[in-house]
Length: 164
Image (cartoon, rainbow, N blue to C red; front, side, top):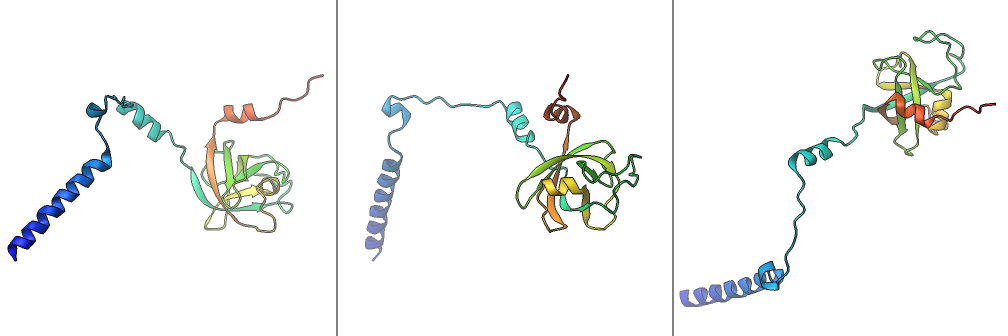
């Protein structure tokens, strides 16, 4: 009985080793082909990995419109529901934020000029015009992603006024 088990095991190991060696094909020294491996320095690899844009915040957004139109904001300017503005509790006034609607991936850049929202669980209140640009439609609330935008980027994106 032991002889049959030992014989079977020896045959199995021979077949397995032949199959494993044939599956890879010839190695580089046998085929005469040399491969060049592309190496990335460790510092460059870390810089690439850490360069991914991370959202400032993700959560629920709401919008406000005609009821507040003309009333003063936290920045002192009157609220204009047709401007691309927003209210946030902690982002400094005057900061530009890219708001992306996570339902349809539409995005808009708004300027924070007010404080809010006052309802718990919401991260930003958008002007009517900003909510319309994000296609909130009849929904008052949407899940959004906030990304801080540098002022230079906003300046490049805005159209230049026609000169006479």
